[in-house]
Length: 318
Image 1: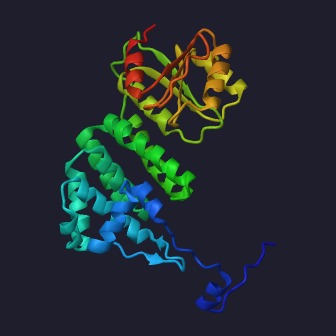
Image 2: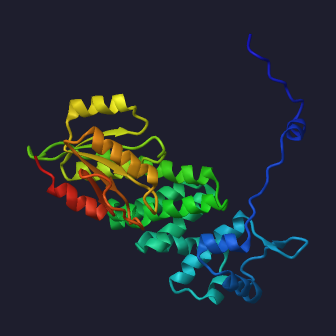
Image 3: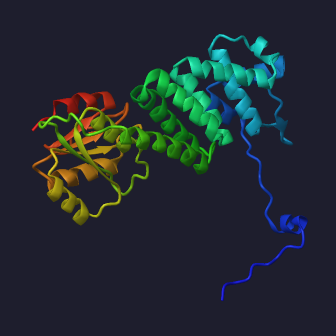
């Protein structure tokens, strides 16, 4: 028999049994890291214009909530686009929001788009996130949006998560919405007019990597350029990977690193692939990677950006 759940007599009884929900709390250093506005500037803005009203601890330390952070992100975006802080301080929250949306819909400045998307993320506002992202893709194209906005944004969010400034839920929220966009874009690419001499690519990731958006973007770029590609994703055993390779016989095996520097496990994974499949090239792709190591094996190629990858894949022919 299934277990019978207890029935609460009223809503107050249920609340009494549930742990209290803690509101998000940020220090002035958190706001500095997320918004890019220096703590010294924030203190001046508070004292002179009253744009934020943080609560204070018994030891007089400023603490901010989600509302303060969202407000500051909007203010910093307007200020970066020429609005004087004295004018912003006189605007209503609704007017500020309207101006922010007008800017993000009409301009492609990458920092503005990132600020707007972070604001949507903090509110878990899927509709507005979708609108900002779609407008950016329409104005700037998917390629530029991914390389100049989304990947730097994801690296920024990952850093904020490491410091505890945002939660894993925020990061997953963004990754899923970006993933949906990429899958739709991939689905829109047909195999018609593909050259008989098109290269063959097989895409995979090590088990340690949980984000597939970089690999999906590589898949999209290959399909867009009429190359042949097979997406195998992550968590494949060596036996499954060998079976896929024997069936498809790719010219190149592609992996994409999401990190700002090459992780050691990626290089180790590439070395293993290079030894396992000596007749193919193993291509490691980063997006504006800070450090570029030497190739770990003769048939392993390390590319520092998707721009380099585009040039490489256009040169691959049978």
